[in-house]
Length: 176
Image 1 (cartoon, one colour):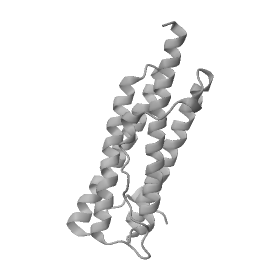
Image 2 (cartoon, helix red, strand yellow):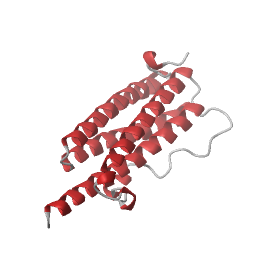
Image 3 (tube, one colour):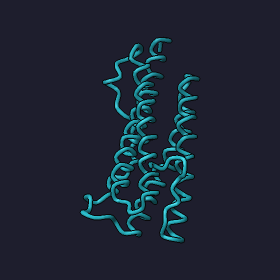
Image 4 (cartoon, helix red, strand yellow):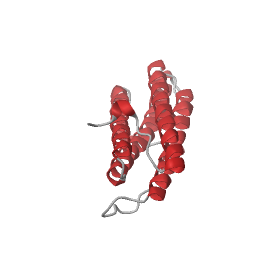
């Protein structure tokens, strides 16, 4: 294999990982958007809208990283890495109800979201070890750290929902 071939192969591996991550972030956008419209408490809905906005930012970061590889290979031909696509559950929400969902439904959905966040952290950390480009490594590390923040917020809210039936929210991001 020639040096140029190795660079293309490395680029394709990175793009494949980035495209899988992109699919996960798209799921997060839809998940938090749908969930925010079903939650009874405004603190919970505001938190979920904020998490959706973060996922939109993650998506933009990943799209920028993918575009960075345009010069080295045809990114449209590269498929998302199947190693990571199973992070996204096949189904989380039943069709949107006409009214707000029950507390137990909120807890169940939050547990699913928390699981996706935990698996996303692991994916970004693992992906960081699979790429050579230092800039891309830093981006993946940053995304992993951001997902840790999401995980921590969801864990706090899940604890409070289970104990008191109320959302913790997150003060600085409350709409108002």
